Length: 143
Image (cartoon, rainbow, N blue to C red; front, top):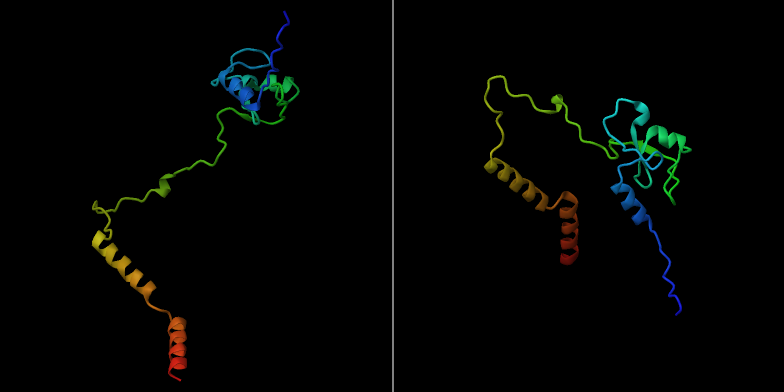
């Protein structure tokens, strides 16, 4: 009986990334990568390409590149650092309360709606150039 040949196994980048996200062990030393470490050598770092966790020392001893098959990226970031801008609010950004203890006077909804209505009317009114152009067209039609 002839053996049936199995199709080749293909491993995609997504497969590697998913496997690396599931593991909390350093691929170099196989020890757990912990976040709150006093020793800077054991500081957790993450490969910028595939997201694999390492100890900083292990990354450096591994040649300063990712040890994951197919990655070999040469840059890392410290685990827990922000990758995108963060909104920061300072106390000076918060308005100070009034001295007399009363809330500040703000426009009422009725006042705001009236102001908005006036602005819309103003936008609907034809401007000087538009009126001049209309006057010229009217003069051509008359003449």
